[in-house]
Length: 198
Image (cartoon, rainbow, N blue to C red; front, top):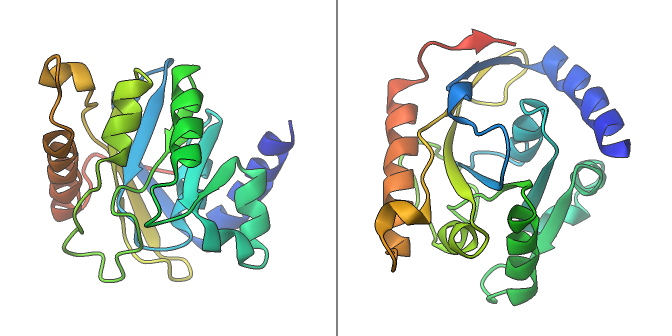
């Protein structure tokens, strides 16, 4: 209940600050474990993902985000949990697997950090592929296009789902994420198409 209340309040605020355009929603499964894998251009990205989805989401985010005034509080209320970057945080990975294995939706930023240029994507880490494999989840590539400037347009596009089963009995996690990265990169290059304003 609290999640929906906070989401509604934040959605109202962000809808006043930015104009959202969305496409590819038909690529999002209606049920089952999902991992959204967006590019990462700003600390606002997690909120953008949350307010464009009716389904309740959980987020894996670097622990330092939770110390940011106001934003840190919002992250916690909107289902985020911290991960210690560069330490192989097994506890965070296990929690992520539990979330999607229970049929819920999770957001993981595969670049692992903000890409301040927003142009050439960083290498996609394999964590999302591992969680998808262990948690029987679908990865949905996602592109966030634009800059968070007052009244600017932010385009969100969803790509074709990817599963570990697509790669055989012993999936190559690096190849999985390379393919996800390619989709996200192409969507950014295209700049979003057939979008619906929100």
